[in-house]
Length: 467
Image (cartoon, rainbow, N blue to C red; front, side, top):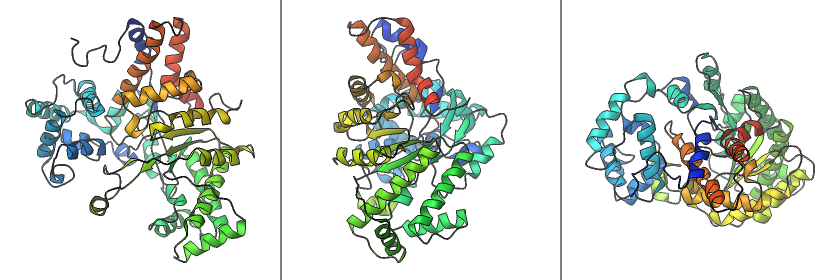
């Protein structure tokens, strides 16, 4: 019986262990996360482990709810210690859940705590962690530095001022690049209740009146240029349900005017607008040499009662079962036919779509960039052992795994960089097992290059990151 999470955790043969020696030394480019740039700019510190571990982490909240924990001890007014105890108890029921591995990796790597978290050890771990949190090693900036992060991309609305990114740049002692990501979801989903409120914010920050679809596209292009001036290299879209419907410029302007007037749109009208704004943005991204991330397949805010109480992104989302292969093909093709398809990373939340994306990327590759169209890493409910293996297996069988731009955290937590270690161990074991089984030759030079490229170099080159 092996020791729990020893130095060879997830590495099941000698080749895997050798490959991990290369992987663990590689720096991190976290090209998609939800860290708060304000917290980085202010170099936030934490009073206790609950604040850094449980505040805002809907992965942990979902597990606690599944364990019957009252909402008071999750997002409610219980004390931080009471919330920590509730999570510690939940860990006893979480064997097989990636949270069990992630949580203990974070305890080991950041706090040096080897104890297994449960009801018996909770008080001891609480005291040890909180004592360490008093030191300068646990500020936001220092946590990023300790994780060997060279650059990270936050997620930012077109109406954001990027003032905190600019503030971070003033700290000459902080060498990590904190870059904005252009995330225009609120510009696309015009049927949502807050669309007109968001449009007013965009008018304010751009100091322009947006009274037509054409004007909206012009303003968004200037916002993209502003983001690029502030270091942006990538954009991001959440495509929750498939859409693709073309129409004339006059029809699009009429639809936009109808929404400005506060009228309700039909699904057909909304899809026409979404298609045209998406395609307009894609061309803008291509012009500015930006990568475009498409996250597909989330079914959000399922629990109406809890949405009204707590809002979005608090753990009540799940996997949708949409079929969007044909629609996705048409969206990409409409950009490619004009030679204006940007570098694109496709993510699916439903693993049934792994092969859909694995084959879709091959339709639009060209010599502009090696691996120009990417099948993104296991996302959200798939960023666990089986999900990562399924994604990389599909990619290797249908494309070129060695061109893969690798892992990202997609997280709001400064401790989540251990997920890169988790991914790298799984990657090394996957490739090492191929070697051990005689499916791949043992050419150490090629294997070393492959692992290092997937861990960091490919993403660095793909986004033309200068470090």
